[in-house]
Image (tube, rainbow, N blue to C red; front, side, top):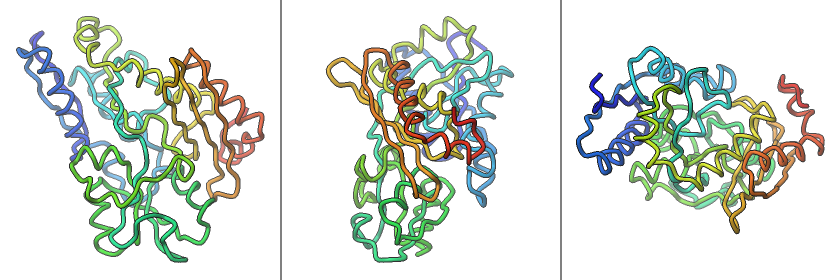
Length: 309
């Protein structure tokens, strides 16, 4: 490929295309002479819509094809929602850039109610996330939590077709798709601690492509990168995946990373929370993970097939 051309691997959903085009716009703003091509790929996670992600391999199903595209020289970079990226990056690839984070909270979306507390007993709440489901079950056990898969537009149509009384989506995705009006309310941190990396866009590329690293570096947002690093360090220590209700949310406070972490039983019967702060993001993430394990949360991990140590 010509040195002034960048091929961006992306999923085909409207949100994924928006994110890839956002990266393209940011690159053009700095390097006006670049040629940028979108290489659109359908991932296994996009194909399997009738089964919970936790049962078919987790959110890594949304990135594997994109990563193979880079390793096979079909694309130069891949643009991801960081909440979809597994803790292990394949050999030969690296997450070179974490862009500035959008609102990381979860959104309450309903045509008739303003928040979870307004929902009547046995109201149907749709979500594809064990993390969201477990936290909602713990606080609102009278609600019926149902699986809801598909891209944002598909899920909203299911809501509008009265398959659910409410659905839970990411605020960031709705804002990026100019669907702010669909947000009836924002879930608080206490109601639903966000997913690891939620609201942040990552740019992955090949380890040995140093000229591309330099070109991309201006898109990196240091504070967001530090927060996501802390969250992912915690998740890695816990062996987290889509099959485990783990949450983590970091912010910068007084030049330190402040991280809150959570492990929940899938049915919401037990929830463990911990927090820590420090200058080193990865050490802060590890400290929160160790605190969670010391509290006894390892038994949840063990029950879900993870070592829990």
